Image 1 (tube, one colour):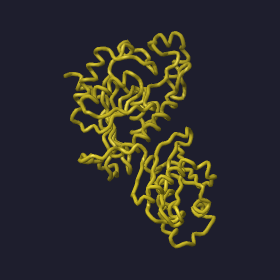
Image 2 (spheres, helix red, strand yellow; image 1 turned 180 degrees about the vertical axis):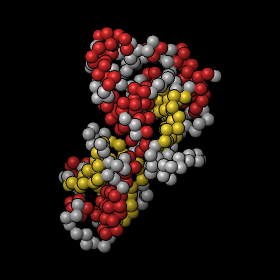
Image 3 (cartoon, helix red, strand yellow; image 1 turned 30 degrees about the horizontal axis):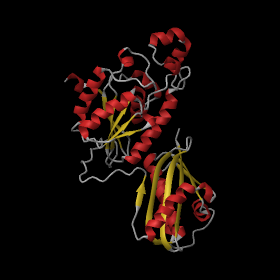
Image 4 (tube, one colour; image 1 turned 45 degrees about the vertical axis):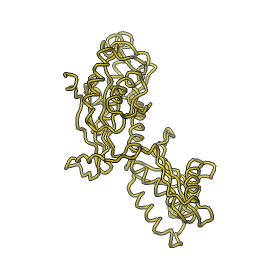
Length: 372
């Protein structure tokens, strides 16, 4: 099923025409979570031109997140909403090329519908547009994107896409590192959202992984908030000098009442529930979280990563379930494939995500660095 995204956009000028700018953002429709944000000062223009520019930027941001998405556009510009919905004719010659550009941007998405909202419900986009107008009034060309990465003097050469994929752009590369050993993983126990520390072996594994990643061009590090991942990520940060960003969406599954138990112990106490959980990703452990629920938040975290770190090389330090779910998403595999993957502690995997083609799994469960 295609995911649904919401685009909120606005634009304006001081004087109409006058110093102008736009703002747009993309949200995940089911959760309302902010996925992308963009604003720009555009010099001297009218309100309507700025509003169309905001719409175009919002549609392009949505397409960068998920070209197959269903998009709901929400704007407080009655003119733009009615014209793009086909109910009002576009008469002004300045609007025609902008409307065509907006339709072209919309054609790259699964579907797009337009709806009018009052200005007080478009406050976020309005605020961004006003910041852009302020910059235009100061004579500045100002651009803002959500968590825009710092500029680099050098850019690594883009990795080649598989010849059969049809992709022509540089990928966003995710290096996926499972945390090092913990007391629970050493005993094959359910370790979910509890903050379990690394063992001495786990710390040594994290250091080995860090050394293996030292020369792999890591430009950003994103970690689960749980202590075992933060400790693993810290070892890589020390070697690479790259700051660690915490992303809650990459935390482990909440295993509920099974936390700290072995499979055998869970099976003794909840035989029917364990059997159902092993057969159906929609079934959660008692008091816990289903794999389907985890997949939704991991997908949102991945979308945010693609926006923040587009075309960069990012290390994601996470857990068994989120990493497997990223692999499932990359392969377009059924959720049942989760049960057929073995992912060891401190193992490295790699996925390349392309804007204009399918993702490519480059490595999975690589532990060669632990043998050093």
